[in-house]
Amino acid sequence: MPRVTSKRIDTKDLQGEGSFIVVRKVGWKQAKEVNKYLGVGDVSLRDDMTSEEKEKHINEEVRMTEDVLCNAVVEWNWSDEAGNPLPVPRSTADLDLLLAEEVAFILDAALGKSESDSKNSGSGSSTTSGSEEKTTPPLTNG
Image (tube, rainbow, N blue to C red; front, side, top):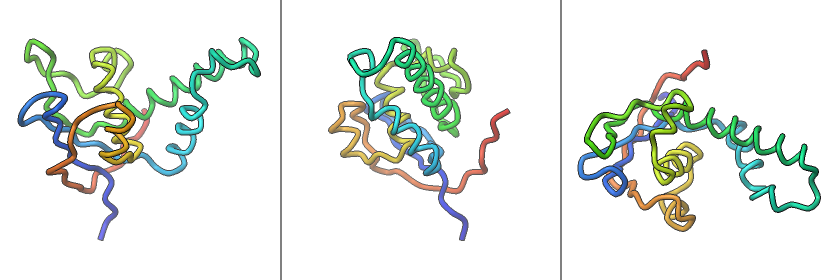
């Protein structure tokens, strides 16, 4: 039986009744790298890093996070405030169309954080009830 590589999640709390997202799960290696950077917290407040080290850290954190986000969404039926369909994020410009809460939700889902983790971290109030897992072909970075 093939490995389950994606998960369909109900997103009615973020996008309204009937909305969903199918998220590709991130591999362990990439999840460790992203969590290492995210776990440092706000580096601008650190006294033990030079300005150059802080800038390098922030740039790498942004790059890795955007990479996860632009590869995480397999499909969705999300829309903007006017009801126009939002593009599945594949670039920074696509991510810029989303609310911060939506981006945090996608990141948590891709990194495998549970529903209770997401609620406890305040990064989204969506439910994963009615979620369904399936096999998805890998996305190639091109």
